Amino acid sequence: MKIAVLSDIHGNLEALRACLAHAEREGADMQVFLGDLVGYGADPVACLGLLADHAGKGALLVRGNHDEAALGGLCENMNPTAREAIYWTRKQLRPEDRDFLASLPLTARHGDLCFVHASAVTPGKWEYITSTAQAANCMDAAQATVIFAGHVHHQALYFSAGSGVRAFQPVPGVPIPLIGRRQWLAIAGSAGQPRDGNNAAAYALYDEEARMLTFFRVPYDHMTAARKIIAAGLPERLAWRLQRGE
Image 1 (cartoon, rainbow, N blue to C red):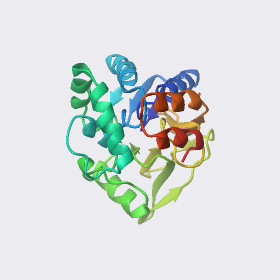
Image 2: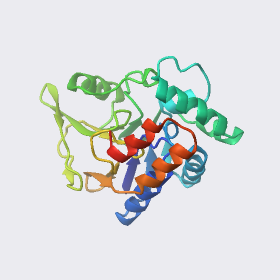
Image 3: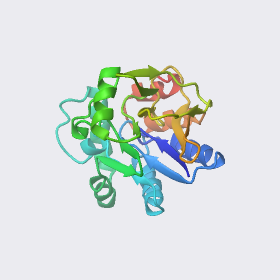
Image 4: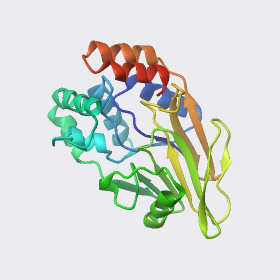
């Protein structure tokens, strides 16, 4: 089975559709969505409708910090731009959208795979994984052969090596064999708001049978997504972030 893993969609319908279409062309049999389905982007309701359809067909979804924030609270830990986008998003959500977000778990499993938005150590604290030490803690907590996470908005791969954990920077489109008895932690990147200087949407595809992992970048109509943000009255900074990938 080939599993497409998308994270941090952030209400970006154009990016979501582009990644799903690309994954379908690559032969994906299943989809997993690693949270932060809403926030920042101008199409939270449309994205949730599409994601709910996939959930009904067997896709796995977990909750992210922006999803949780969209359900309520003061969002005092968010920066002003993110907080403004969340308050706007709350006004758009229908009761069924809120129920869908509230139903999502913090982690999900499929065989020897673990899926989480942030770190598996304490998923609800939304810890970023940006170091080998944080990756090691996540891997120990997950107790799975391959862990998929998001939250960081750029792609990375960590693996166990001897007594420690090492980091590896994947090259988009180049398959990586997940060989041996190692443990692996893949950061899928952001489909809806990349922040590595590349405005192409990001996702990962895992071939269970071959144990091959491929990270992808998918160009999409980011200009339309940006124009929608401005038309909705959301902070303009969110629009130019999509254009610049920052």
